[in-house]
Image 1 (cartoon, rainbow, N blue to C red):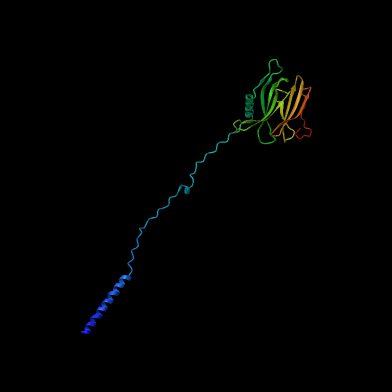
Image 2 (cartoon, one colour):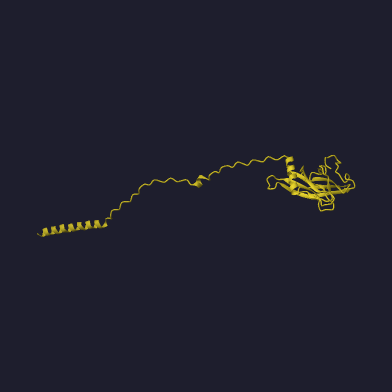
Length: 232
């Protein structure tokens, strides 16, 4: 009987021990890990080229303007003469005064020995009254076809007491030294006297180099080449 009781007690103790072990395993076992979320695959979007990457839009080429054909020298000389007639109109003499006043203006092309500008020599004609305030003049002009006013006066010199001969020999280009442009003026004073004026132009200013008078119109002055170098 006592043996039976011991055996039952052993069985009971063994059962309790197994129960404690099972409870301990349930407490120490970690919970199962949650499944990781899945990400749906995405398709990459291709990059779109911007206008900056493509570069500026090319502009249409503009054809160059045609170069104007240069006018003949004779045409330009006539054009300058007509222009001067409007800018410097003839000045009539006073009633009962001696002389006719300035009756016209002429222009001739001259050689430029200083630079590449085209040059014209312009001068007035007519018999002015020596006691009046009207004087003959000599002026130098150049031509710029692209300028608003193509004809540009470079310099002007008044010729007091000079009556310019009404022909092409009264005023001429002279040759002294090529560093300056020389202008020779032969005119008259009064009834029988003559006057000689030599002007020079350095590209900027026109100045009087020589002025001479003589009782004879032909003896006032002249240039002469004394060494044969084609310059006076």
